[in-house]
Length: 85
Image (cartoon, rainbow, N blue to C red; front, side, top):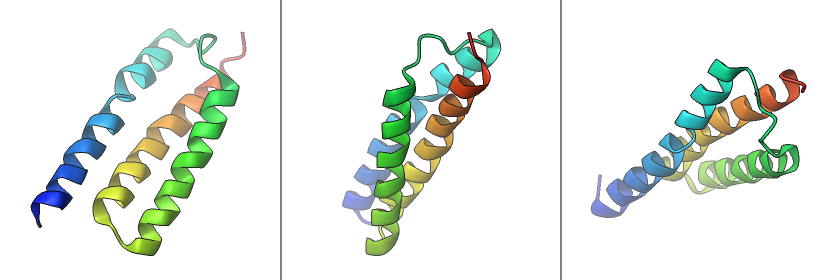
């Protein structure tokens, strides 16, 4: 693994982990009223496109970061749809 891949993994880890506090807070509170349905819908779609791109170019940092980000962001999208206020 070269320095560029390590940099990509570090960047992906930071941006992915950034979603974890929001997922935990939304799960514990049972409320997603302050989350934008439109924003998270478009965001999840964009991350899915990045994941497909990473698979096409076979770039592990792009694949791993976007797979995990999609998991966390779609969890928030699920909570937004499930916790109707």
